[in-house]
Length: 156
Image (cartoon, rainbow, N blue to C red; front, side, top):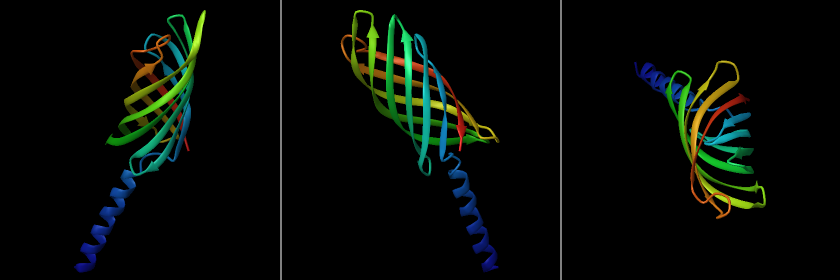
């Protein structure tokens, strides 16, 4: 009887550990969208531990007569919902450059992130997220932007 209880407890801990590691080691793909124009980013996610990962997005934005190129890094906490669905929140920062006709320069930003993702049984991930960004540069963006995007990534 003691062996059965010990084995059951061990099996329970293994199943919990397996479920907690539902985040893929790496994911690479595209993140498409913006709050007031069009933007595309190359997106990379890297597993850290348990339910944490890093996300790096390198991309281009075209909105309100401004072209911008930026790099954003985020630390994310991933929580399972049910089946292959997860939701996540994160925070991070970024830098970039912009061209607004006769005005160009660089900027910095701080960002949050909240979203939902679905991991298919094949190595494909779809996500929808909102990234509030606060930019620091008077000439480009010194306000809050709500960057909403659809992500598609290959998990490996």
